[in-house]
Length: 232
Image (cartoon, rainbow, N blue to C red; front, side):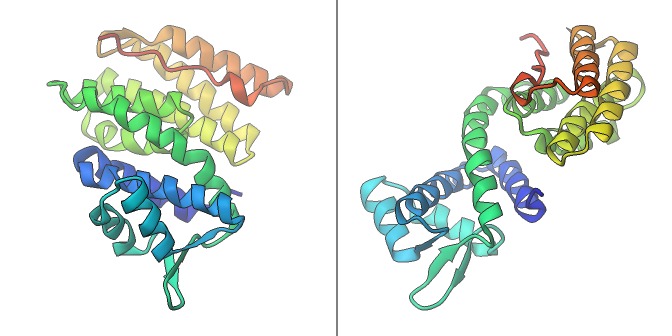
């Protein structure tokens, strides 16, 4: 079972990090928190220890940590002196898996922010999220653009959303839900044909192949199809 609260909070942090470099540094503090958890062999770290390592040994800025702690939505603080922790071992495992992916995606997204065409920017960032296996975040990120578009573009965006949502269903251990979404996504991408100058049909074919593999029971998690669009 995925920790849905943490999943949602990490996506919210990612969204804010796209627009604010200070928020992007919050991921560096989370990475340090994880390293110290491994060293301590428990999912909690005293605030004083985190500050010592972050500021003196890694040159991290306190402001970013204060931003991270302000809401209390990811790391919680308890006891005196303050001890930072996650809410469960499941959240720790999830953060260990997702954090490196977000740290890879954020630098990849920087060039995309300079694109003049808003749709191209959105699709390229969604592509990076998808290819890092951040499927929930990919379909959530595409939702706003999908709601504002019309015609073939809207159909194409819905196809991409369903592709990401399908693989997120697989993460939730719903093979049937995954297959249905992938097949629907493939049909929509075949119908729309192109998006931002990219041919969607090869990706649609890979989604259909993945759905068939899931139905046979021989799909491997390492073989998620890559979203290779749009060309720049």
